[in-house]
Length: 344
Ligand code: FA5
Image 1 (tube, protein in one colour):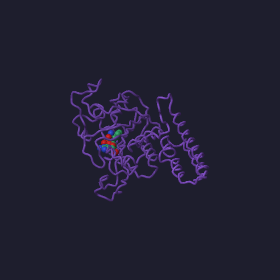
Image 2 (cartoon, helix red, strand yellow; image 1 turned 180 degrees about the horizontal axis):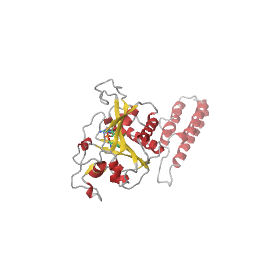
Image 3 (cartoon, protein in one colour; image 1 turned 60 degrees about the horizontal axis):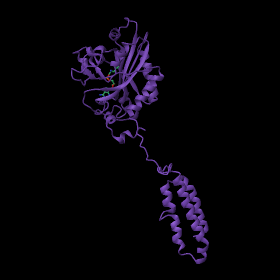
Image 4 (cartoon, rainbow, N blue to C red; image 1 turned 120 degrees about the horizontal axis):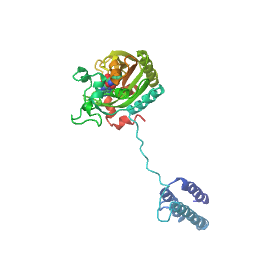
């Protein structure tokens, strides 16, 4: 043990008092097994001359470090009663991560906002009228079977809408089309992000609860090319040209003509007849769309023949699957942290 060793420890302590928490400082320097105590153990074996020289230095060092500790401790005591040790490290707060469906839903909203669309919302508990009748899907029409439905008991009705039929969990975001058109005259471009529910068996591409993003653009002189340009632009912004897509004819009672958009299957690229995502077709359906059926404009009370428009309904989880190469839609609601933590 030399003079220099003791000095070095004092210097180190002067730095540590500002960076260590109080208790760690005490243990390291002035505790029973601390550095000062080590020096005193060594001290016993020193020669008489060394003891004479180093004794006072060691005692001074001990007092200095004790003082440092006491002063720091006092600064944590506001009114001598409450001791609040602000030098202690806080508990680390686990920051959660967003569900990939939420990430894609938000991304879709900002892409369509940039393209001039306004975000609106509608109720998740709907009634028969907006979910079906107002969308040109009459009662007892086989098209209703396209949307297997969670129904509420007959006697439950939405307040103020008692004459609009039985309540249900909306099977798609399309009912918001009529809710909006009833109150607004064109021109308008709106999107409707939201949860949708279907009473159906689940598999790798079907969940009973998922999200859609509805789009509706109505004005004079709108045609299918406007839809194609908008949707291609949105796809470009989201997939940056990395995914192949195609337009196909399809049927929905509230549009004419109707179409769907598919994206190439990333799992098998059409090579596996048993592929759970595309059944070997090589394509995954991601959205339904079409030109708004004139019947809807009539129901909304618009002048006959004056307006045209297109509508689309994007499957948000399907977009997320294609974007992040997720091969089972049930993972989104699985609450499996190993899955969720990958999307910080
Ligand atoms: C509809 O729901 C129409 N409302 C879409 C529409 C809107 C057509 C406006 C025309 C005009 P569809 O049932 O095909 O259509 O659903 C739309 C998209 O939601 C599908 O392309 C798919 O991406 C997604 N989807 C449908 N069912 C499920 C499900 N069970 N699980 C996960 N995603 C689904």
